[in-house]
Length: 580
Image (tube, rainbow, N blue to C red; front, side, top):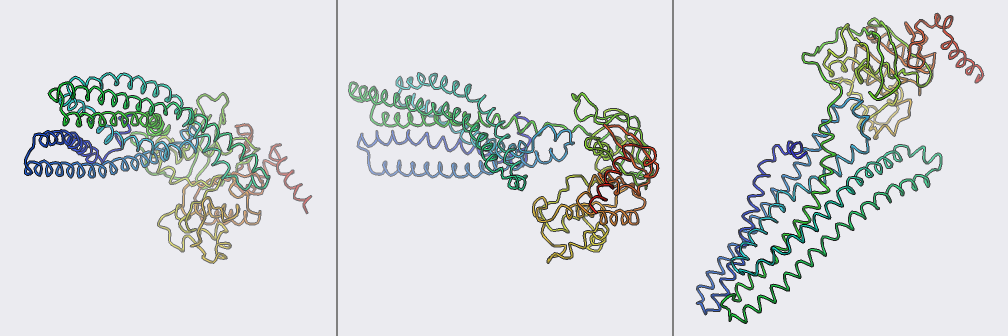
């Protein structure tokens, strides 16, 4: 885990290396100051001259200034290194997620990915900041102060060795008890975020069904669950402070009592006042360093779980990989399925698609129709290699899709999915996802074919109209038409419309299909639809049923020979007659 996380340090290695060096110098200065003060006290006791006092004073001021300088620079380099690591981790995670196949994405909840890129990275950032600064400072301070305490206090310094095992046992208990709790908490964080995301995304449905109270109760239960585990963990962590305070006061009582006794009985021969004052200072240094050390261990305990979750994302390899020598050019839009079967998970018992055999020529318009759950969308997702076929071969342009460079293949297969997504930005910026170099005229032409220009021209800002996140400020039909225009701008060899005209009226649907036929005649077009009217004029229509091809033919052929298609057509047209 540490090795994987360390890869994200990169350009911040120098800051990472410099920080511990500066912290070491800071600690040396701080530990030397009590020693110099002890010498100063002894000089004053011996009746030294003013010049000696001035010399010691200047030396102490210089040491204090150096300690301040080293500490300030260390703070800056530490902040640079830790924030830089967090930035790189988020970037590396985002890049990894972008490379995932749909199969990989299905393994993680969206809310979990968000939590890992925010809360978990922040935990690792905080721990890293403490490791390169406080985790260096605390043990160095402890060692230096312990050595100086032995030099100044002799046998009395052994008291520190007595409390260390007690503290160590206490810290070990805390870590052992809290680790499983933090592991549970982070998983519950994912569920809490999932509840928030689901509620916000479906807020219109929640309000239309007046289910705010139900959603609040559901959220309260999830929040209470997180709170309960965190409270339990915090209660255990709270044992740290009283344990450390007990050790600090026990040491103070011993040093004050035994030290005072030694000074009085030996008349300052075994221990003088200067040594005694410095011993007290070193005692505070040692015990405060132990306090810092316990805080570090607690933070590292939390960050350890966060680190594992981050590494899961970084080490997850896409289930779809490029071949060794990929093909970068797709010859044409021909598609063939040869004995193809597919299931979404290796552990799934049932195939989503079974025994699919198809031969589609470049430029054909293919309609796909079938009931809900008949695997229409599953079929077309294999063409652009969003998933790989479990059995058999899918070919595009005469080659197995696995032989192509994935980006090159997808660049020639334009898909308008069922769930139309628009991103925050202007209409132009959204449309240029299809072609980043598209001119304003090309954008307008694509929108005219998608019947989108008619409503865009009515907006005060036209094509510069700002689209809210998820396209919240446009209707479902407008969103569909914008997504179709975006796909047309790509000028692909294969265009797939996955039920992407369901929110537009039949007249507009017919206009869009007519425009596509004229504008991109050489592009192979797949039209998945619930309405037979959307596929009637297709060259061939595929009827899907239960993950299998039930029939293939033209509208007229299927009306004569296929019961499923005929029933769909009659039920829809009868419904239309009844409406009239």
